[in-house]
Image (tube, rainbow, N blue to C red; front, side, top):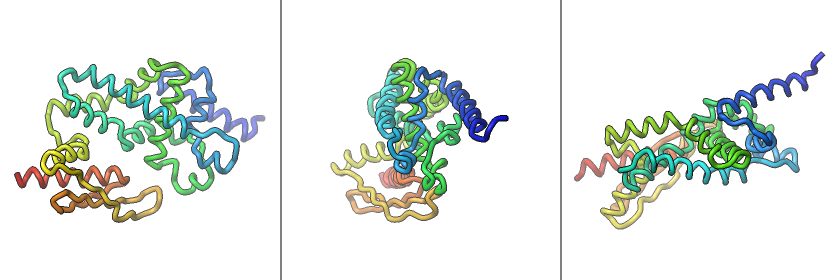
Amino acid sequence: MMTNSSSNDCCRETQLRHLETALDHVFKDRQLLEQALTHSSYANECGNVEHNERLEFLGDAVLELCVSGMLYAKFPITREGGLTRIRSSIVDAETLAGIARQIGLQHLLILGHGEEIQGGRERESLLSDALEAVLAAIYLDGGFYEAKKTVEQLFAQKFEESFLFLQNADPIALDCKTRLQEIVQHSFKAMPIYTLISTKGPDHAKTFAINLTLPNGKVFTGYGSSRKRAEQEAAKIAIKSLSQST
């Protein structure tokens, strides 16, 4: 008779195989994948366990290089600023967390008890970091082209959306913070300032409020489920205001 422990191990093995199918990569060193799925909260509680923060650091660079190369090839006439804005929209935390959920990463994360009960399994920043760590694990296990193949598969829809976006040529819908920075530097020779003014709600469903101050003293407020999304919303409002006043 199979014990509960054996049953759980069997279930996790099945889930890991499904994840490898979604990633289009079968790990030679499965321990790399397990490390990528291990959050620091678990390591802190259990001790002497490798967690995914170093892999996340590497995965961030791997993802940026893969996406940059793909954009360079896909959009041969788009200038550097446009490519930067598109890349920012593709690799933001919201997008990464969404892809992580699509491939079931949230079910495989190894969390500490405290993080688990606080809803960490659905936390956007935790999911996006874990996906970057998984990409680093693929890079270490199979090399750059294996990682690039996985990125191309996982982000195919985002690249298609970017292509359609460029056809519609609406600059506000891209990375609003980058676009606003370009406008403000050109008009005021200075930078906008973002200030966190409040956070409300439980840890797994917080709402952030950001004040954006322009060099001319005007202030715009944005709200979002993460600090980055609130900053983007404030920047979007500021761009619209500046475009109406010119």
